[in-house]
Length: 541
Image 1 (tube, rainbow, N blue to C red):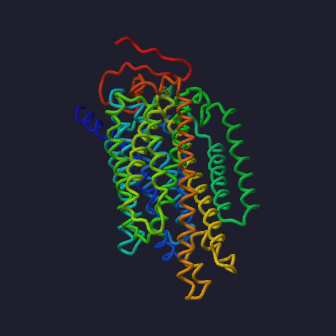
Image 2 (tube, helix red, strand yellow):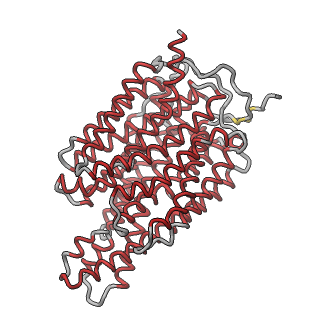
Image 3 (cartoon, rainbow, N blue to C red):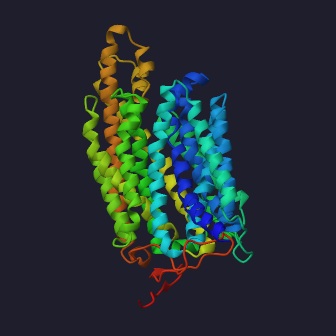
């Protein structure tokens, strides 16, 4: 018995931290691999856009369903099954023979990753004793930074070997090992019937998935230019499906999103803060990596190494969140983290074609610290004051907001950068330059632009390309920083009277739920938090 409890004391924290590590390890994986995938599968780079965007689409579409399944069948059980599915989809990505197969497997990988994330936060609230939760939240946030650090390095190493498939194979092996370890060590008990009130809403899940997909495709179409009717049609479909989803949830006996969750000011604030972080810093960093590889002419490995300070600082700051939570409230950490993100973004504005990557370090370091400070606070806000039987749903909704913000942020900032680059290229181009050349430059297709001009003019086209892309990334950085500033002001205003976020720790005073097994400690801390409908007063110390 003691041996079983000792194993569980290790396996539960490993599951909590392992999910975000694997999910965010796979998140940026195809970005450095796109040129190699394009050459291997014989498709254009533009055709592989959804190989990157399909992953957050799957995440955003399935996080709510993952939360409901976690509440109904137990976080540990669903964690193991979703991790196995993640491994299988990673293997499918590695053996894909066409772009459509790769995109389909990436969407599936995102769906499985969604359930993993929802279950990992659910386990914190249901199977971890309260006085250990702050430390586990810190590990959860640090694991995101670790995944974002290792993912680009893994992809870059794969590119250096001249192949892209080994990167996905390694992720598949990691997922398979994790699922096996979880099967052997996690308490896979089903929760009692009284706690299993959730019911998977298939119609709602499909409406949400298709609505989010249509919305992301609408933004992507708009960024391609010249496709206004298609973009507007997709936008109309997205609005119809998402409004229909909202109406369905209000009428369901067991909704995927219980609207009573939104009564908590702290929970609402966490939703806004997570969406803002995802739509600003986390979205811009994806575009920025492509820019410095393209315009500064860095190799994928060099890009990964230059981004390492950003991701490592995010990791170590998140790791210290347990100590910070004893002195800084969730509110303070959310606001301070968004301030650092905004400052870090602004420090990236001097970037240009002749800029040394050394000048990017201040922005990387400050922005990384902001991400590291914010991520654990977001995880804490997602379950602060939430009853254990609704922790999976609450975590799923919070992560859905983040993934939607990230997917829309990437597509929106890319559309803005493309528009600004096109305007700059048209204004700076020599008289008589064809619209086709300008269009290729705006879309980031230098090879296509060079193919349309004689060799004597290609150096001028390259200079025009670098200048236009720099204008585009400047516009994206400025808007991302603006999103962060407006978001932090909104968070400061929304959280001004939120008792959940004023406490110096996020651990809610709920006893562990039966069914998810042993806990990491005995007594529950006596903390002042807010429940779903009314304040819970703190006990006297």
